[in-house]
Length: 615
Image (tube, rainbow, N blue to C red; front, side, top):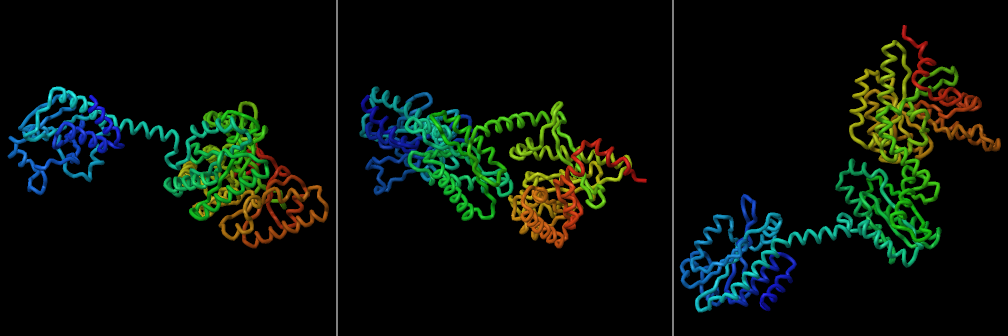
C-alpha cells in the first residue's frame, strides 16, 4: 500500500480539482503501467451533464506517438480493439470491468450524459459546474493498457479500487472545503474593503491591551451615507467605502489596528500619546479624507464624523467600542465639530436618546405626536399674518421637549415619518376650518433634510394636499439653512419644483450654518426667516458701543435682503425693545413669545379664527 500513499500525496499536492486529479491519475498510470486514462463524470439530479475533458498524461506510449500517424478518434480504438485492454472503474459502485470492447460501454456512458470532451480551455468551467452540485458526482475512470502488458493482479485491482474511492472523495468534497476556506477568510477579512473584520479586530485589541493600555478608539462613519447610495448609486457608494478603507489602512502604524465594523462604519485603535498628539493625528486623518474626496469624488458631499474614546485602563473590546460609538452618535448633525470625545455626560445623553428611539414607534401608532400652531405678526398693526406648524410630543400626561426628540429623529431618519404625521394633521385642521367657513392664514410646514434626498416627497406631499383640497396659496414650506450644507444643486432643484407647484418657500434659521450672504444670490425663495441670534444681542448686557455695532450690521443685512426682493421675518422676538428695533430697520414681520406661544389647534382656533368666518 506504499504505492497508494504515494499517489494520495500526488492527489493532495494540487490546489484545484483538475491539478490534483490529473496528478493522481498520472501517478496511477505510471505505477500500474497504464498507457492512458480517460475520465467521464456527471452530476446527479441534472437534466444535462458536463464531464471532465480527457486527461492527457506526461507518459505517452510509443505506439500512440503522432509521428507514427496514429488517429486518436474512436474509429482507431474500434479497429485496434483486439490490441487494447481497458479497465472501467465505476466510482459510484466501485465496480471494475476488464474489457476489450470499451466502445460499447462508451456509447452507454454517453447516452447517460458521460460525454468526454477534448477542449482543455474550458476545464475550470466544467469543474465548477460539476462540483457545485451538492447531490454528488457519478463518474468513471477508463484506464487503457495495450498488448504485451501483464494483466493486473487482484491486489493491484484492490489498490486501484481504494485509490478511485479516494480520488472520487477528493472531487466531491473539494468545493465544500473551498467554501469553508472562503467562509473562514470572510470571518477575518472584509470582502469589500480588505480590512480586518470586527471579530479579528476585537481579538487583536485584547492582545494589545495586555501589553499597553495607552490607546484611543475612534469610531468613524459617513454622515447621511444612504443618500449617497440613493443619489449616486450603490456602486459609487462601495467605491467610496473602498477608498475610505485605503486611507484608513495607510494611516495605521505598527501596534495599531483598524477594521470595517459594518456598512459605512470603521474603527481605529491608535496609540495614545497625549491630547495634543491625538488632535494632530485626527487633523491628519481628516486632511487625508478631504484630499481623497476632492481627488476622486469632487461632485459628492462626503462628511466624515467620528467618536473618540481615550482608554484609561484595561477594558473589554465591546465596552471600548460602545463608548466611542456613543460619542460618534453625538457627533451626528454637529457641524461645528465632526469629532466628539466621550465623557460621562454623553452616557446619560445616549441613554436618553435610546429611550426616545425605543418609544418613537409606539408614540406614532398611539397619536402622541400632535401639531401646535404659532402665529406670525405684523409688528406695526399687531395682526396675525401667518402661522407656523410645530411638532409636539405628548407622552401620557407630560410633554417631551422638541429640543430632546427632534435632534434624535433627525439622526435616525424618523423625522421624515413624523413630518408627514404633522402635515396630515394640519391639513385635516385646515380642511375643517374651510368647511366651517373660516378664512385661513398661510401655514408654514417644516421640511426636514431627509425629504430632500429621498425620492417621492413631492408626489406624497401633493397627494395629501389634494386629498384635503387645500388651496396651495395657504401652504409655505420652511427649509432650514443648514440643509444647504448638503448637495446645494439637489436642494435648489427641489425648491424650484415646489415653487412651480404654487407653494411658498422660506429659508429658516438664516445666518447660522452657511455662508449666508453668498447663499442669497443662488436661491429662489419667498421668505427669509432671520435666526433669533441676530435679535438676541439687541437686549443683551453688552456695552452700548458694541450693541450699536450689532444694530449697524443687522440694518445693512436687512437692507440688502430687501433689495433682493425677499420678505423678511424675525423669529424669537421676546421683548418690546426688539419690536421697536424691527420697526426702526423697516422689518414688518416677527414671531416669538412676546406675541404668542405655540398653541394647541383648538386654542389657536378659538383665539384667532372665531372672528375670521367668511361672510
